[in-house]
Image (cartoon, rainbow, N blue to C red):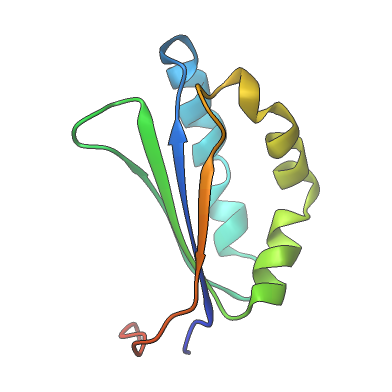
Length: 103
């Protein structure tokens, strides 16, 4: 499988909301990985700042990613994100140029 679309997302948590945010964001992992078109979906925390989180996602197509972002739990998240974050999430979309090395 060669992913065609990659999304990275950087989120800066409000310190007082950190633990609640971790639970919420972690709850996205399994459902996202089971969606059609999801190649991989990873949730990270910064080694330098415990309030900075990062998602790295590979999707077969932009249509698959757009379908993911339109799901009810994603829409709910985007509607509530300001209560958890100090600034808007930084979403960056990429097209993969190298071969995906995962079997």
